[in-house]
Amino acid sequence: MERRLITVPLGPLQSNMYLITGDAGIFIVDPSVSPEKTEAYCGIAGLSKGECPLRAILITHGHHDHIKYVDKWNEVYPEAVIFFSSNDKMLLSDGFMNCSYMEGYNTVYGYEFTDVAGKDGSSVFKDGDTEITVLETPGHTMGSVCFLIDINGEKMLFTGDTVFSGSVGRTDMPGGSSKILAESIRKISKLDPGLEIFPGHGPDSNVGDERKYNPFFAV
Image 1 (cartoon, rainbow, N blue to C red):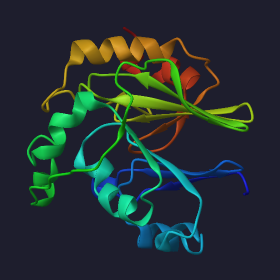
Image 2 (image 1 turned 90 degrees about the vertical axis):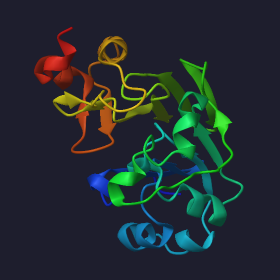
Image 3 (image 1 turned 180 degrees about the vertical axis):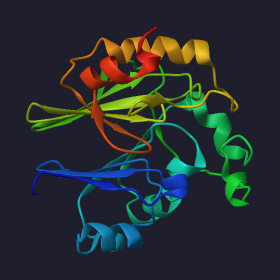
Image 4 (image 1 turned 135 degrees about the vertical axis):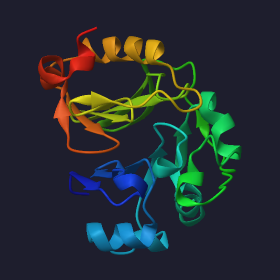
């Protein structure tokens, strides 16, 4: 399969969903857009009908604007592994904590997942030229993680709401902590300056630019 990275900026609150394709199959980061709308946007025939090699769904944290359609994707692709931190499990059963109330819902999520809590720096998926490593980066929520995807030596960091271009995620919601987030930012700041960052909202960036221009990196 052709190597592609597609940003789908159609989630609630203009959240970014990402779809990555390659020889190892398809991977989704933060399933905030429906399979039907994703297929139409990406132009991948059969994606909404379970006809594509979706291998895994990677969830950076448990807020509604990042997981709104996880149950639908799980229904269409029940064999795809869902990677998620159990440190955010409490958010799934409460519409206030997962912020679905912002859209007027009280959504409860019941999907099963492969737990990445306690696996900081560990590889959670490896097949051929594709490897996925999880970095635990709490602060926006207690279970926030980043996923480092390496495809044939090309690395991409998906940061959810931990780091944005020029900013960071808010810490005034349940499970948030500005002190803990600062520690996570220090961890990210030590990564390769050329590493590309793909956040949960807004444009992409890289570690080097965030060191220079993001005031939250000066900690």
